[in-house]
Image 1 (tube, rainbow, N blue to C red):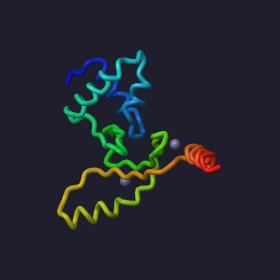
Image 2 (cartoon, rainbow, N blue to C red):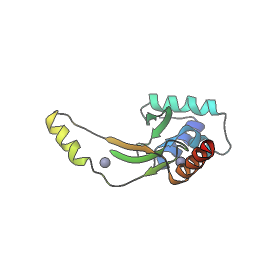
Image 3 (spheres, protein in one colour):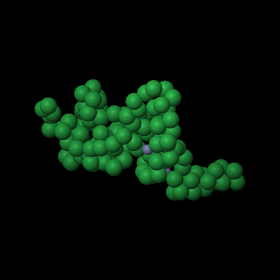
Image 4 (tube, rainbow, N blue to C red):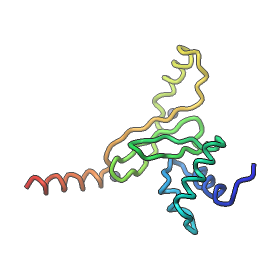
Length: 133
Ligand SMILES: [Zn+2]
Ligand SMILES: [Zn+2]
């Protein structure tokens, strides 16, 4: 399949990412930086072609590369939207069980937790204390 230069670049950024990645991150890593609207459009195109998947978390869209084979596990900061990977796969047993119970061939799973990273937590607490005093 032939992709335009920009679409190929964006796909490379997503595929080379170890984590799920949001559109601003993708845009930020492109050099030269294209118009962000064309990044949105390219991502729509790649999704339609089934080259990438996405999930929306708290209104932010994250792209999942096909590189994250079968499963991904993340912690996402609600404040700075930073994504951290973790390796422990605690749900493969559940996946197997569901496969049997529901008679389903399950091909992938994405597990994520939301919260506040240390820096944001500290910043938020400071803010809270300031408004109280
Ligand atoms: Zn944070
Ligand atoms: Zn897993």
